[in-house]
Image (cartoon, rainbow, N blue to C red; front, side, top):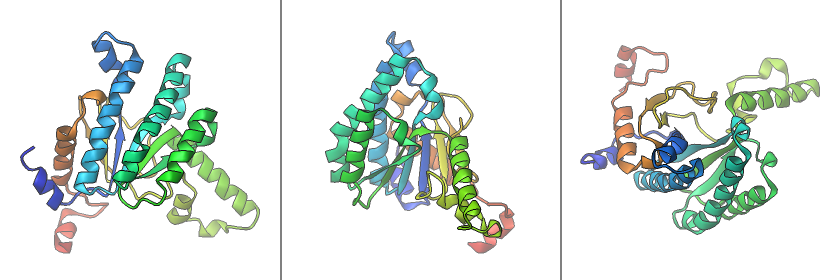
Length: 249
């Protein structure tokens, strides 16, 4: 993309979130099983992460495995867990080389033991990195996140740790799976569907949404640049008028 250099100088989003949709359909078009699409999708993840590092984007969140994905055929779930283990083991050295900190969003305690242990190892090995925060949503659902937050706060109110009248957005945020992350600025969904599918419901409150028909395994740096260019053309008002925004510049 000829103006990628302009993107580096322009106003980039602090937090990009991506729903990586279309792996199964991509594989079907190739006459392959769905899992083949997931393996090819890892290549798109590498390209996207590399581009975010090059551009200096601070936070990238990827919808990797939702609470609803457990309902998929067991062989596909097992293949996804095995793929996650393989990818983590293969990429940990590169993550450290690129100063990338891996984080998770969701209830990872319910992952298979091997997946959980591998994940913990990589989280620990990258914990001190200060570059891109790469956040993978595992066993994650936006409604589940809000339910878990509500339970935590309710317990603290019951035990007189929190007074009901002190509950505000900041306290809610502190009890979310995604508590360490800023609000999402740009949410990208590949695969042609136009919905947010229970992803980061609290953090998406004022996000700009970008939908593309590109299936995830075909997503590359060019497509990311196009999404970022579209983002930079938008006026983010957060409830204000255009006149107010212009007067603040």
